[in-house]
Image (cartoon, rainbow, N blue to C red; front, side, top):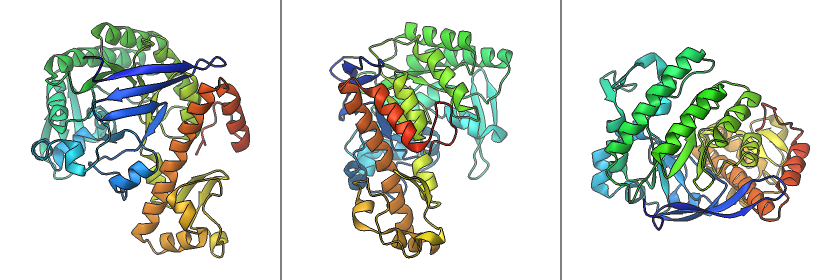
Length: 381
């Protein structure tokens, strides 16, 4: 991978904490880190247009390999010119590998050495996803950043199960790297697994580092473990990864976990959480968690969040947003999705400034105090 196409430029290390501020250079533009990435599972961030995604300050959007494989199909996306052309988004994109579906669709799959046999969750047809097939699909989808195919193991898992899973995932990583056809335009990340076991995390991270990927993901978190366990998983992974490559914590979107991840040297985060809870009327705000459907907001004509600069908060009242959600209007889901995404992105913007000013530890402590959180709080949204 030539440096000019994809690399992380570390601009500043916080003297107080060691947290990192950088610029991630990609073929579709440069983005600041640490950052939060909205999830567009089916080449669409639910209810948001590309213009709205840019307006909230998003850099990278994530899309889902497994789901785009089934609908519309990787060949359709390739014929359109890749994901960015297909969905009219000119910023950087990332695709996962299908490895999370090995976890989330556990009732409909069988793991073998050659790959994973699925039952199509839409029509029941048999499917087979191998490391080579995952990379082939992602090459056709054309995202700037793509993921190695892995197993995202369940939690808890026995040591023996996890060891066998990690060893197989490492073999899959080698196979996927060998199958990668576009290394000059698509950065392939290795995914560190190992559950809660430090020696397995170390084994995974060191083996992947020897394979020399352009970046590394930390997988197997946010699958039912406590926050305390999650933070140990991050620590057990980060310390064995190279300093000069991006680190991506997969599937984490609560604001306390994002801030703890940044403290530990993570650069990238994604999660469906902010948009999923928005569609059910739940708001992340400077006042804590809000359920907009509650009767107390019926005559509340103030903004959703007085401290937020998003389109929703500048233009609509809590009373109106309550009305939209009680009537199941799509606009309500859209407006709360805009706000929740902007809320998390703004947190990472503030974190970047704090890192540059060598006060990230103070910033995190003040934030946690404001929200009544602690480092192992499990209600950080």
